[in-house]
Image (cartoon, rainbow, N blue to C red):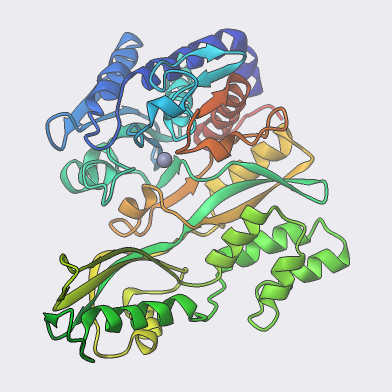
Length: 458
Ligand SMILES: [Zn+2]
């Protein structure tokens, strides 16, 4: 493998992958409406120029997906997956054009530079390199740049492909977004590899009461009943559900720390001492907030709807709640957990459910990631991580439970700046340095995982 790697001119590749990302950013794929066909057409053209057949499919006009395949041996296929849609921008809050793809002072600017046109570009580059280098593959490698990850239920992207064109995306292993960021604990360096995510359980609470005139209050007021339920839910201390992934994450860090810190890390999993331990951990406040959320099911009331006139008591009041499930939990266990807080009088209507996911680290792909990182950054440790939010894995794993999805876009803090905090924010940008860092590592991972020759030079 190394013999081949040496023949790659990485200076040239840096320009090429930068150019890919700039072009992708210039396609305005704000979702809604998406219009991901712009990216799909661009990518298909790039692939065709290299002699690779690309297939474009549309779930609806404009909602374009592009897929391509390099044939290999009989091992289970690997898919390099990315979404091409992006979230909306407030252009007046940006200091550069969010769809300009400008390269300035080592940074590529624009919506999607981090989430996740950077990885779409890096995976495209890796895919082209496999072809150019003539790597003999032990398995098929699929490239998929798909629509509709960012908005609501995301029914127009990878989930739609699985339902309508499964032959395009039938891989057992998937590399996509969600992990690969680095962090430090007491000077020790770590990269996350996302192996799991919380589930989604979005629901409405609906209280019914007696309508009436605002001048004559009565005790059967829907607004009052709903408020009581929300207040109880908001103040409830829901039980902890520590997961295997979280345990492995904390153990991975603990193994590098002094005894006292290691003990605090382990105590975070223990219901009695968790909160005290969390507060003492030498981690950034946003990481502690994430850990707290990952340890249990969570509920955030976000939207209230009731009444339309100041002098009319409404017959109904509704609250929308964004609920997230810890691994191991289900819609039923979640409802059973919160029902005592809200009481029996309130209706609970489920709007969206997708189960939590947890993929094993006992897999040849995960091992490959760990091995490659040990070579590329010998002082750092890879730890499996859970995400409070979701990725396209939520469309894959419930349909195809045997598929192992890992989130890994290696990414380092550069110049003391935490780029990743700009995801979905103003002035989103990525350094070219990180883009190339990721491309090289992903190329190493994919070639090592997919190269059929066993005579690799050590
Ligand atoms: Zn994303």
